Amino acid sequence: MQAPAPEVITLGCRLNIAESETIRTLVAGRDTVVINSCAVTNAAVKATRTAIRRARRARPEAEIVVTGCAAQIDPASFAAMPEVSRVVGNGEKLLPAAWASAAPIVVGDIMQLRETAPHLAAGFTGHARAFVEVQNGCDHRCTFCAIPFGRGPSRSVPAGAVVERIARLVDAGHAEVVLTGVDLTSYGHDLPGAPTLGLLVDRILRHVPALARLRLSSLDSIEIDDRLFEIVTGDARIMPHLHLSFQAGNDMILKRMKRRHSRAQAIGTVRRLKAARPDIAIGADLIAGFPTEDAAMAADTLALIDDADIVHAHIFPYSPRAGTPAARMPQVDAAVIRARAERLRIAAARRKAAWLESCVGSVQQVLVERPGDRGHAGSFADVALSSGAELGIIVPVRITGATDTQLLGTIA
Image (spheres, rainbow, N blue to C red):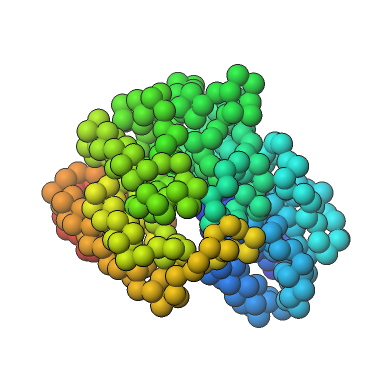
């Protein structure tokens, strides 16, 4: 009897999505379920535990392996779960030897890693978009964030390997590639000559002319230098959608978070981007209820949604992560945090709905994604098509209507 197909359950960021595709090839032919975990919030860790229990109920005979940031940060607690067979660290999860090992915990010192992406041969069969890791880890220490302890120091993939990888993906039929990383704008400082992200993007566009669309994942706005700015605003193959790591809209809270930008700098960056390329859609991460946040500070973050024209907002209620400086600061009451997060979500939804309505009557270039009647415009607006189209192609779509969350259209 043939063993059930392996399953990889991905939580968290686009980098995890990219890595999960490699993991899928490493566990091929095994009765295994891999949970590639996230640790960005306490809720993400809780979701990981829920996924583990659900996987065990669904696959009682399978090997259940936990990897990802939550597993890296606290391997013992996951190894202690009766549902878990093994725990594999972030530094090991892309290495064949780790999956061949029978040890219950295969987790090394992530802070000792100095290279990344030994997995550039992985594919994205069945996906319209492909995700390519170009950077991993983070050298910054935002006071709320545990991710550096799950990902280790910042390290970059040499440009030649990235270009070769993207060329193969384009040859395989992918029209859009997304560059991913933990701290994408820190790309290159550890490589010979210290190339920048702007230099990498320029090289990709020049050396892979058949690539139709290149999208960038989350950026630190303070690190968008002149070269990257010019490419993002001046090259149509770069998608007009930037997700910026703002986190808050109040200067004192930003300082206590140990962020490196001010409120004025955040707003100024968006205004410069939209002046140079008006169709750019702005996304941002925003945290509600950071320690010491009072009502006026929360109001500044709420106002940032309009002031920075944020149409793709990711709202996170603050949750203290063990070992981080923010966890030792005076905490905001949990009920207040929930209320502030809800106000942010309502404001973000209002802004997004108005933006989507403004797109009605336009023609958008849409990458058709599964199941073939939906996709994303360059601005990352979700688009529902009135009729099916071939998966993975880019089609012109006339936008005929909008809901609060997506555009409706017909192929032009």
